[in-house]
Figure: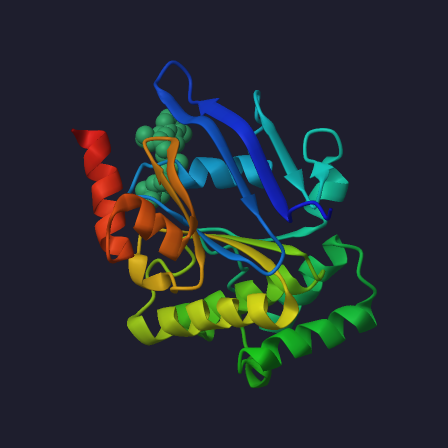
Length: 246
Ligand SMILES: Nc1ncnc2c1ncn2[C@@H]1O[C@H](COP(=O)(O)OP(=O)(O)OP(=O)(O)O)[C@@H](O)[C@H]1O
């Protein structure tokens, strides 16, 4: 059996002496699956991303990327993953091309391959003609598209995005959401998409509901709704959160 693109098992994490930010978190993202990590502010989404991307080191539990243990073989595991962080990380004074080629070089891609992939990724997002503009001149939605193109340059099997639509207007949000869904369908890329916005989640997606550091429900949207006894994901989410508050 093929290993999931991402598997997290029994992961816990605490900041100093405070309460645990994550408690016994387990989840899996299969190839070609768009999995939304849905949780309100403070649920633990960013903490989980920091552990998956190895900004923080987990002291308990296991994270595997394509079956490769992140703690045991970090370089090999991270090479399989593309990341879009919540805060933009492009260099505003470089052009789109320079940002992409610099990143590709960090991944050890030959320059010609990098050029071809950068152009292809930008074309898919309708950004090819902006390749020699400085990033500072692009609007927020276009900057996000460039970050997405950058995350795909090394052809990862797994793409993780932490609330990637924060600060974007509705059309820009919709464009990014649709584009990432297309990547799943057309290329079989596995996606973990953190959000607190239910309208970014489609009926055929999988969802993992996280609240106060614990997983409250996980599975296809239809199953989560059925198990929660709700008609819509909004109702399911409200019930799952309310149950906790009671
Ligand atoms: N550096 C830190 N030091 C102490 N506590 C922290 C730190 N970062 C996060 N926390 C706490 O850990 C918990 C989880 O926070 P986290 O940022 O992971 O949630 P989130 O789901 O990403 O929220 P948001 O949607 O607001 O980004 C919260 O209670 C938060 O206050």
